[in-house]
Length: 347
Ligand SMILES: Nc1ncnc2c1ncn2[C@@H]1O[C@H](COP(=O)(O)OP(=O)(O)OP(=O)(O)O)[C@@H](O)[C@H]1O
Ligand SMILES: [Mg+2]
Image (cartoon, rainbow, N blue to C red):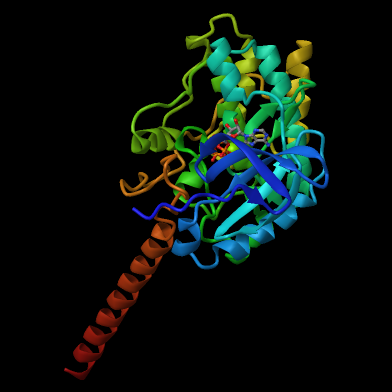
């Protein structure tokens, strides 16, 4: 095997140790020589480039967008570049655990603590959404708690510009989510996604933090199907004494239809504040009008595996194709009727 050793420096950053590895390559702890600060360096796997020659172009474009974000709840992007054959992103180093680390250590979080984290994340996501950037991969892994106890969103550098999506610029690699937190619309069509997909994933993340488990389990296909079709299991199954208002808020965040979720981050934050103060929430008694949005099951070939670098668009053309087929049948029927009429008239 001709295994290539990863570089030990990336631009002005010297690698000291590996921090972890996710769906998009490895993250290293390093030191930025000229700035004299600790950094986290995300190094992307080379196969992304080989598979998709446009990948590097998109990656650097997104890194530039992310570098413009400046918010107390968003991890700063400091630099990006290519070292040898490896593209990398330099981020502010967060000296603290991810929310997943916290849940693994503590079993589950007190609902008030979890709601406070989610409120901070909503503030960062709201700021990014105003700039046309959505995350698409909100999970407990991508929320860290820094040394001052502040929630910090990582990987907004991998977010896609919402406006670009509509033009199809980000059509490949458009969705990077893991299946456990993925919204029904991401499962059905990676293109029809806006900030409300992040609200859904944030709701599932809240469920995980408070209940200690994700709501939907099974194979990748089963998890995806459950997101699309199965009502959210009550969080009270795991933590009996949760307030009803907590369950109402989480149900509204994770409504199957994006239109039935919170219409803005302001509306969500307002409810989270009320929840913490014990006041009546706008989601009180929330039930979804229609539980099933998908008329088709996710295709078995669909992928949302953590091991895979991108989620494929699952059957996005299906509704359009059906319309075309129906229209074609109608045209054929009209032509046959016309032909029969002409033949009868001639006869
Ligand atoms: N800015 C950062 N500062 C400190 N540690 C970080 C930072 N970003 C990531 N890490 C660490 O590196 C680990 C791997 O991160 P990575 O983003 O590659 O994977 P992930 O978050 O588990 O999955 P995903 O691919 O969905 O983002 C994280 O779990 C975290 O411990
Ligand atoms: Mg991450």
